[in-house]
Figure 1 (cartoon, rainbow over the protein chains, first blue to last red):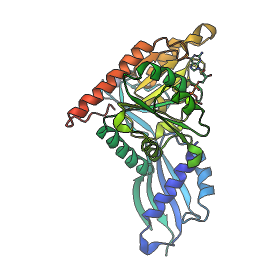
Figure 2 (figure 1 turned 180 degrees about the horizontal axis):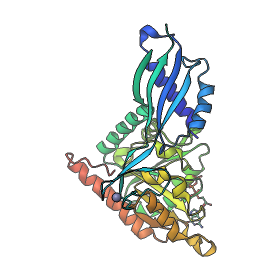
Figure 3 (figure 1 turned 45 degrees about the vertical axis):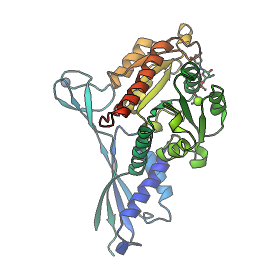
Figure 4 (figure 1 turned 90 degrees about the vertical axis):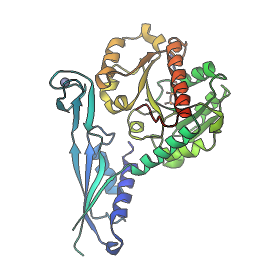
Length: 116
Length: 233
Ligand SMILES: Nc1nc2c(ncn2[C@@H]2O[C@H](COP(=O)(O)OP(=O)(O)OP(=O)(O)O)[C@@H](O)[C@H]2O)c(=O)[nH]1
Ligand SMILES: [Mg+2]
Ligand SMILES: [Zn+2]
């Protein structure tokens, strides 16, 4: 629901990452990592991105989203599990006392620029 | 050519939230971020909670809605200082962001309060993603919403530090399976304190109020010993 705000942040982050001597160059692709435990739906993000990128340095950019699984470590037995759907339980002992290791990422990792 | 960036998209919000957290700590204000779906009873819970805490625990309120000042009007009747945020001025956001809370906090006399309760915009999705500088996060789930909400909105129930199961006065009229709802909350967040309450009848208020007051006291103690920096997460 707040994907448009997130997209505007992404565009700003990308814009700020382009060094001054390369300003004006077109961005070909934008790479993102999005955890599966974030409140962000990749399809909505793409939809908003396609609207918001117009008239920005990202006008011609494609969005590459790498989804990061929810990985958790059991505080009882130490097992690391990938959680596909709730409940959040250890795949070995079934315990629920888990430390979430990944899944909350919302990161711009890199930009690919057109050749100057 | 590839440019490495590796920057959190919400980095700006996180920085602002950290500044808020520091401001609230300096002023010795314990801050609560209260979230839920629309109509779970956040405002009524606050009206009744304020009625029981004031004037013993000086409390201020920030209330976020997309539009209208109805909730602020209701809450102001308690005598507490209330600041309304309408997010339509900020693009109709479905959540409160840290900079918006900061602006609202500037309209409050933080030195005069020990507790700040922030009623977030009614929404179980987006507010979970945005740190606003609170000490603790609470989610209100009302018994008219269905037992499966924790499983449908796991992020919200995972990031919260306590839950309030509200409108229990209605249980006799509903098919709601309270034990299953509680099991679903615990499936996402095992140790979560859960308070079963009715904002309408104030049933279950004593444990909730005692717990809340204890958190406020703790904050004031850590404030007197600045080397201890537990923020309760
Ligand atoms: N029966 C009953 N009704 C309640 C209770 N708590 C709240 N309500 C009713 O639920 C409705 C919504 O309550 P609000 O306090 O406005 O809910 P809210 O979460 O602040 O709503 P938004 O701010 O719009 O997200 C109102 O009609 C309240 O009277 C309760 O414990 N029992
Ligand atoms: Mg309300
Ligand atoms: Zn285990």
